[in-house]
Length: 600
Image (cartoon, rainbow, N blue to C red; front, side):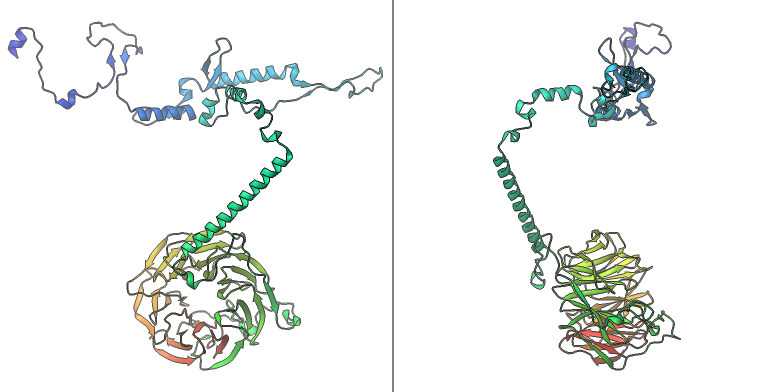
């Protein structure tokens, strides 16, 4: 180094890395890199500074486009601040009348220019509408014609303003005058006259309209065929078990009718109350835990039979709260409401062309739902028998339930593995729950009168849902589980039971973890292949269920001991079973022999 310094040669005193040598120049650089010219610049004068820095071209283009569209872009500093057009002293673009070029001006100057143009336009005489002398008022002393005062007529605001619309609106701005004029120049005489069809004879126009209507009908038939093919695809695994499909999107259910069987004088009592109003014997509802007034007992014998269905009875439901009326849905497509006190049928509802799969009262009993294998769900008025709504999604509904907090919403489990929520007023589907892999069999609301929903399916799984959320919050699935086509909630709300098809009744927690209670099982009956209902007494002490051989079984809830079994129905299973909410030892059963029995 010393020798080199003696001869006047440049000596490199440090040894930089190769990565440092290849780095781009950082920061501004002086125009004179050799430093020969040393000129004292004025303060604030940055003309000698060169911005030789690297930057992201993609980010720059994004911010430039954002600035053109919205007038705002992100500043290139570490704080991430924003820059507006006003910062640079302009927010508008106008055309200079003298030079013919566009220039940027401030908002104040632009608005002042607009006001001046508006004032100049208003004062122009061609923008006033003069009235005719013939229409003028000729009354007066001198008889001279007096014209009416002139009336200003403002021109409608044009959509096309100027070429600077691209600055104000971006890519969504209206076309400029130049573009519109260019498009008009490119139009042919035929297009200006209204097109080729305007010059055709009326016969050819009518023929073309007929061909278009034929194509439209053909496309509609093609769409219907596609819908039917989709139905076959969805139900391919169980098509041999389901009824015929609905043809067409606008398929209609059969005509509905209703008949009131007692004399018309019994439709209202001497007080003017409807036949839905319960007697005084049924107005005392039972509450869970009230063992002093509503202690339940095991029924001993059959005390009454209700006959009237031409075929088997699949489901029975008691009137909410009082239980003075009994609703039944039969395999003959009819629904009937029976009087528990009078032991007779009150009204028959005919509105399905196939067997009724499920029926359900709403919260006050004034309406009820019926779903059938004809793929329709119908909402009935219990008192008058009128149909208030008919709903279908082209699938077979297996179960229907009203939402406990709103009678205008109900859910249905269908053969396409979905649970759908309907708005009964509009008839539209408001929510779908689609996580099952087989047709849905049962829906049960738990926790705070319906904040959670339990569903079971033929896929041997039980899912827990939050209301109105289409994703389950818990799966209950086990390799040893069987399908549970019936689920019933215990009156305490702490447990729910499921009719397992391995000939036992499984018990689960009704809240929190929904864990299975393996030590509590109820066995002894044969239910394989049948969705037999489960009923629990209002005080929670006893539980009863039908079986596939037509018997009725009664267990003690606490110990799981089988207390009684009766021969209830012939020619099939005891498919339905309900425990009366007021009468302490009254149970109703139904079977495929077409008979409803009352046990006490």
